[in-house]
Length: 153
Image (cartoon, rainbow, N blue to C red):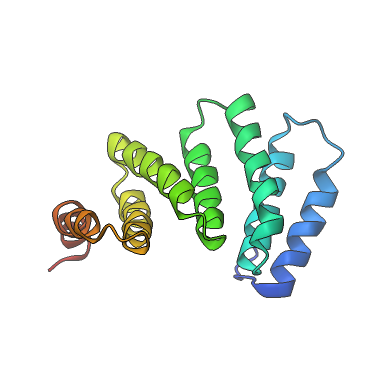
């Protein structure tokens, strides 16, 4: 849906449903079908419907792992979306497991911009579950130096 606008709310959800309905009849291995599924899951979550988004995001991640196991970038994005949904549902321990995995992979890949985003998500969840010392260490020792390097002092 890239026509230069950022859609949200009911419009985003309607577009996501339309995309899913367009590609639903294609085989599971079709990349457009899988992308439409992921977009639907994200739109449901962003529209305040995480209960409905959860099985969609789980299916999207499973498809990506099954048919595109070497596509690290999209698998990490799918894991991040699923972790955000779990967080929205109050399933913080499950979200934390996924967030740790995504953050560790971003560190290994040297993806500093993604590392800042996923590290921020991880630190937020750590604070939510009361692991303040661990969140502080992550923010101070790992993320702050990257932010300073990227953004300046």
